[in-house]
Image (cartoon, helix red, strand yellow):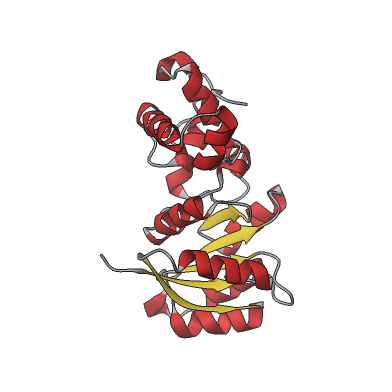
Length: 232
């Protein structure tokens, strides 16, 4: 299996070093390079054309949204679509989420995401699927219902499901608890700590939830659950 070529543009030194160190531990990741500001980041992306670029939204000078827009509009037509942009942010504001996708971002994650989920996000993004942090899935729901921008097709979960009740999916009480924590952005390890169960048990619950909701990943499960009114 070919490795995923990843570049990072992040101005905070400790965050940048931490992400580089953590991601380099995974055999499926090939580290392409890093930059600490938007200008250097744009040059890095244009020169290396990574599979996935992790871009901090709050870069000095040229911020992550502007960097995304500049890169998407300047990339050579032959290389268009080869690099996917995964935005990192400390905030889950609607304005930032919408601005990032309007600029051409492919995925959107909170900075407090676990490395386990970040790796999942990188893989999904590289495969051409938009990955949204479950913690901001509510913003997607509001846009599906009253669109201001084009929502990625893999998150347009067909017709609204607000009339579908929880019993249709036959979720157990424990699965609903786990589902709520997924929507709130908890990792498997954090869910295990919160519910006083093992990570292995959490993974079993998550697998069952995905099967019952006919979802491919946690993000789709979160969006489907919110639209169906399964969680708040």
